[in-house]
Image 1 (cartoon, rainbow over the protein chains, first blue to last red):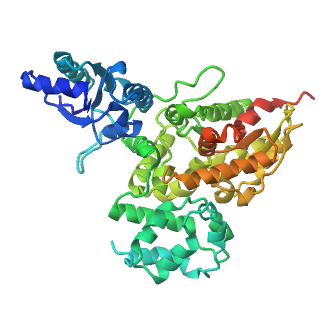
Image 2: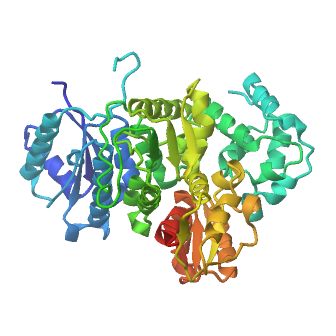
Image 3: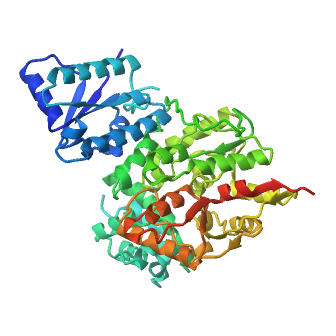
Length: 141
Length: 389
């Protein structure tokens, strides 16, 4: 089966610290992710998540701080409400709501973060590619 | 692309811009201009013809237009402004990329483009069931449009556009019509077409037409005026020899009700009506909705200051360039509605409902603009009954 392409969106604070620490500790990471670092997961809106799917992502995972840890205030709550709505839209579109997940971490949870990335990768791999993936020019239906 | 491109010259000629007398009626009636924006259809026509080097002005103007068509209504020379704007956007989008600020960061356009994938197995009909009777195949279909998506996306402002669809089906069922509702129906592509994305719009048209054919549909009933405009006017351009009759729900209702036997329960309210631009000016259907409203006993109907073919836009179209001026158009429109002392604002387009509901919720207006807003189909579906004698 073709390799799936996933997008991980990291909050700059706890989750990115986890990723950094995981890298320092040479933990093995899945290779099918593209990572984006944002200052806060509250920066990500419904449109940006949908656009990832429009451009062909097979899955999107939002990695955020715990609700009470947000450096700015309501970041993770904004994340929850966006994920909730976009999951409903993905369900309507038939893309499948489990292609979008959000996970929250404390700054020291590097192995939990890496495990979450592996789990999501396996889960999406089992679902196969995003049915709305744009076709490349010349690719047959 | 330079703006003295021969393709632009062709658009200017085809849409009669050379006929412009510079009388300024268009600018004098443009809702954008009247709310204070530096925007002028007359100046756009002038610059296109006489000063084609003012590139940024022309491009901005092309993307700023609401395409509500009020200027075209007033133009004594028959300049086809809307068509021109649409074709210019397609041309500019093809050469310079999509411009114009997309409201909600383009999320709506994203899901419309996602629907162009032929493999998509949508799961958007879980609201069906209960008392609604629908068929899998047959000669007559009802086009639901984007309502299930709108309600999720706009859940923050509590609009219920799905109620329009449910009530339309209830009305059809009341008339003993069991419409086909297609599982795989996609967005009609209106917003993509009007934001210059012709390619994806055409894909959506072809996919929808294929679904209609597979289900053996000969006639489509539509309640959303934007879907109506696309299916009746633009789809035949994409599909030559299209064999599909497109009927507005209000026209069908009026025809069926005129056969007799139907009456309406009294509704003791005072109501006014917002003409959607795609229904009133584009489809020319100003009188039918009013005739239907007036059939309801006890309902006091009051016109707004600007109504019928002169109705003012709900502030935005195609989900681009919603700005402070759009808000002002909406506020002024709602003040007109309030001035009729009505407690019910009837409209016939889900977009009008979304935009006006959004403006009503402005916290700085302290609820002074809020009033109940309902679709024509919902009002009729609640009142219709068979006459007892």
